[in-house]
Amino acid sequence: YTVFEAASGREGLARLSEHEPDLIVVDIMMETGDEGYGFTQAVKYRDEYRRYRNIPVVMVSSIQETPGQRFPMAPELELIQPDAYLTKPLDIDRFVAVVHRALERSAGNEERT
Image (cartoon, rainbow, N blue to C red; front, side):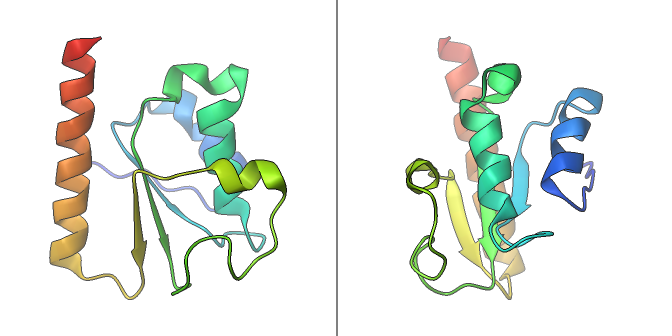
């Protein structure tokens, strides 16, 4: 896989137009406590990023609880559902399998649309 990195949600959103990805892996905690949610919300719901809505999102975090339990979030953030959620430390074999499945599902959806 070719990987492009971004240190913040803002940088990640800017990179979308530079390198349209097949999959997005995002950490919940970036520059702020829940910036990964804000990034994912923008990709999935904001009109200016609508062309990226079908890109699978794999969310990772060291948070062992269900997303949203540890951090109080705005109600609209509670609607965000990544395609997969993995906790750190990552089991690399599982991570690769989740990425592979997400890419396969995404390719299957593209063929149907």
